[in-house]
Length: 116
Length: 114
Image (cartoon, rainbow over all chains, first blue to last red; front, side):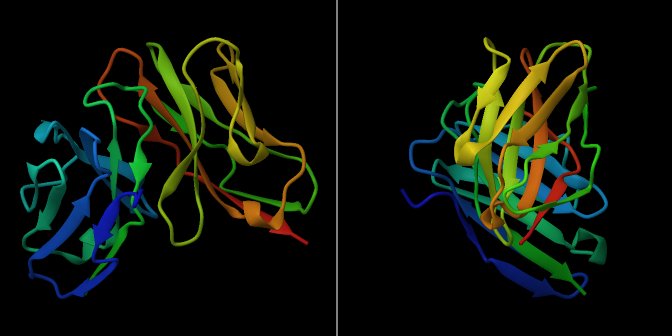
């Protein structure tokens, strides 16, 4: 089992540029989550999908952020335009259940984003 | 809304000493409780979870946690730590009758000194 795969692992960009983060969940998992980790705010859930459908995006900070899940094996988180305050580690996680709160969420290694 | 408070941001201990990492939560409804560990430059890994039943939960790597409903606590313990336990530990809750939204504490950095 390859685990949750995220790319890139590190991204450095300039303010105003578009950034796309990618995630491949564990095969067979039906739920996918995007989290952001910062020193100031800790770990926050941005959005999650069940069976490729966005369920709750209330954690998305603003319209500059968007997420898609075109199929069961791929998701993207896009920031356009990026700002220095978006600098953080972004984690993707997946779980088996497709709606079951007790299922374990398996985290990817994260993408460290730096916006200059 | 629910919240999680990890009372210690950093805990230094000597190798082979016992350790307790404290976690308190606040919620008006029932929650499930989790502890995750994050090793340097890695994602989070589940240590253990409390869903129901016995209030003492055993997890991986020799860790255990005890759910105390009256004190709304879920403290993590290990009787003897190793250098390899150096990591950041996160307590989290999720509503029993809610969405799949884990709410995390701020984390506790455990440092093991030889």
